[in-house]
Length: 73
Image (cartoon, rainbow, N blue to C red; front, side, top):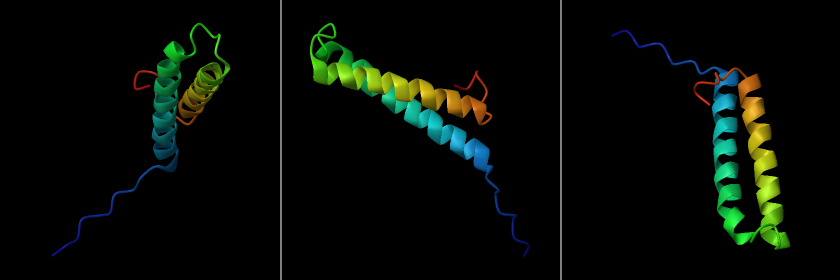
């Protein structure tokens, strides 16, 4: 019996999907903290919002640089 060839995973594509997942999680956390920030009058949730969006946009940018298409992102 012949064995099926092992799947090869592309390192850049795997990294781009991981970065996309990080971006999604960071964006969901930041968006969830928007209400708790009470119009950016409370410091703790406001820091979470700003940090979450910075992480989300950075991870999205890096995932697109790694080769992920904009249509997938």
